[in-house]
Length: 76
Image (cartoon, rainbow, N blue to C red; front, side):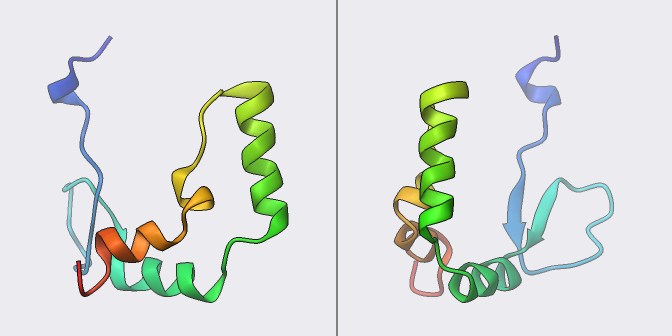
């Protein structure tokens, strides 16, 4: 098992070509996609099924899509 210090922390940023840095995508693009494809009933149901049958945890950004903007938006 890897030590916690060996596991990279993925962080969104607005840079590209990060080399080996553990970045997770361009923040502005991910937020744009989030706004352009709002959560729908299919995603809510999928989140319910994953919670009830498999992982017993939820995707908080399906339950509270407004949190993405509150955490990473320009006014955050």
